[in-house]
Picture 1: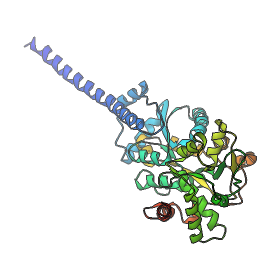
Picture 2: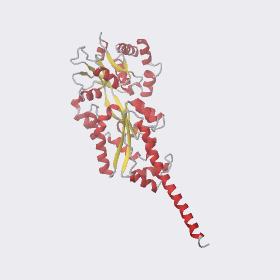
Picture 3: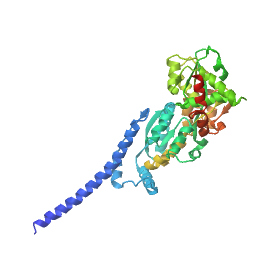
Picture 4: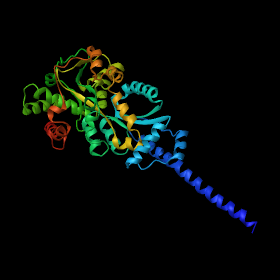
Length: 396
């Protein structure tokens, strides 16, 4: 009897230890598996700049407390508390392609500010690509904390997918519009065709390079610029449709997006006039595409690009506080200056005055609100069988 009792006690202790080890392993591997899963999703996003790291202190945190289900209020609060206690927090920024240069300067400014104020390091996972592609990636599982997309229509799609709460436009300054631009007409050196405004796109022999508004965000803005040039100067919709039809008749090929349109014009030498974002033209010049002539039409459309906090994912990650802080930081003079340097028209009044000479004044500037908002615009102009489809069929 005396020989069996120690053996029985040892067996019991081993069983307890095994149970504890199993529990610890489970707590460690769950957050590691989650990080690995998000990493795989990020890899499929267009233009991804990615670093997914599970630091040693994250394992320590996992040992202390397993986060509750983030679908429940207590879980969200617990997750946010855990994130606030970490030495390093990660944010995923998903944006459209031409903002990359600006964010390369803005992100370090925010990291310095957050470190100084909160004592916490911030690691960014960044993804850049076409706005429509980025929107689809987020809907399909790219867990963005913050998005900056080329048009409110795309952020609206995130709302309809249940990722962004209704009323997101009111959550940030300036109705969440963080950058502005206008449509620019870029011509060959010396402007040999004498392009001075929208009406000159109908000159005999003028070839226009543009993208397809069914697939490209910039092309939707270009279309609205063309339409506004008639509607906002006293013409009716019949005249506007006729004018836009003639412009597209002078367009030999529709590029799939702004980048391809630029390549047709700059690299392949096609066309006499390129329709593009003003900021794209500024950035192209900074990268060596010089010798071209740029016209900013005096009747134009305000190209408004919004920022949004992706509510579903920030609550899941526990990153709402820092995500909202980053989104608000984009409206500060420090951030707005970096946007302005690469060609975006600033929305901060102080920075507007600082960069006034950089941007040509526009006499009549209209917004998508003049046409009823993006849902109305999409249905009227770009939906199946809508105005653009009618124009495209007429030109075939």
